[in-house]
Image 1 (cartoon, rainbow, N blue to C red):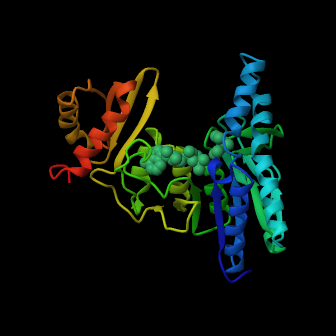
Image 2: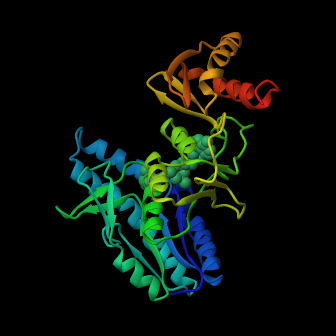
Length: 329
Ligand code: ADP
Ligand code: ASP
Ligand code: MG
């Protein structure tokens, strides 16, 4: 047993996009290990590699076989995991990479959107005991009954990391990405959005289910069910990000998320006051010349629909009303 706890980190696509970024990740992991931690590092495929594989399949077949699709897509993470292990070794850090199957990540049989059923993790534990950094391919597992390789759905590396943290009894799981944490809105759409220091599981889940790509919805459910706290933070600096945990209760307004369905933009306001605020928000959109319509509504969220061309304007307007005016605060 080591004195320091095991740290589970996951690096997303942008964070391992090229050799320079992979080297930066290797430096960061080396620092963590030098401070005495056991390290398990989950990686996504480099940059847009998964999209490129999807596009290759589409050029070959209109209806690719789901089994072969998973064989194809899991190749992306194999590249990044082995390169990161090599980068660590080049720094004198003992490291080994494992596919999801080698790590004992068992799933059901649903190709393309499989659910993790269990992680046996023998090789992970043995390698940690040997003093190695363990690098694991995110987004993939194996169905033990058929021995077929599966994937966990787009963005599924988040779930791999949370499940590994739960298996290893790690106190938290770090999700390192290309933004500084979870914001009140996608900061790429709403420059005035601000980072939340903490958010509860239910608010985070509602945001993720409504399109906030920063965490895969199922990873949030998994974290809630197993009590793993998730620390979403930047891989580009060491600032602390957003802690997703049971420590934070529900917000009156947590933030807004967006998604595009056909030519419709769907903006979801999340929080216990969402339903109360939505009429005023739609009114102010119409006042600003944006045709906003009501969408789905529950006690935790309310949706507003606009034409896709106006989604950015609508988000900025809604964010302003909710967070940047006296009435909204
Ligand atoms: P990774 O490759 O690291 O998994 P993703 O692209 O899946 O990264 O998720 C990070 C992206 O999520 C950010 O670049 C940002 O544009 C988007 N995003 C959407 N909503 C939010 C939000 N509320 N807070 C932070 N980021 C968000
Ligand atoms: N590489 C996979 C994807 O692009 C999994 C992930 O990044 O989480 O969806
Ligand atoms: Mg992601």
